[in-house]
Length: 215
Image (cartoon, rainbow, N blue to C red; front, side, top):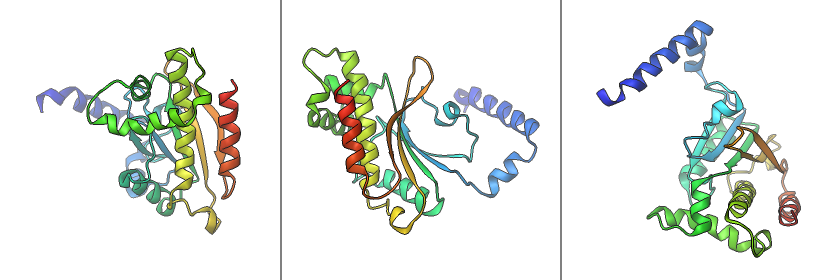
């Protein structure tokens, strides 16, 4: 474990700071978790979910993968989603992408990386399904930023279309949001797509994607 010494030392200092700040913190945390939010984000190490929204352990339920993709055959993601909604009773599902995402850039440029190319095919499909969002002559920088936004919007739609999201039919309060994070300034931005009830996704998705294409 010699190569992990720094991590153990950091952990010891962090635990001591938490105990000093709030002596009952770990006892409360061990008894239960009651997060209001599920965060579906990118696995990028530069986007630490709890830190960028200022929430403590126990306040944010998190699922991460490359390029924050929600696939209907991904039982890992669906299991997290189902547990968060049905068991933890979260009130908000947040899909958060980020500018400068390596997965998005590889998908746009069709850069071969190996096995992950099959995963990023989902992102490439999104670009091909929305040619109006990528006019001729668009720069790679603009295209990848726009694809990062469009990917978030599509994954919000995918969350809402899963069989897991039947909370609305049983009158359980739940909102699904699309956000994007800027590595350059550390700020979150609302992409304007929030779905809070059954039957509104198609209209809201078309509105927001249309606005994106016209920018």
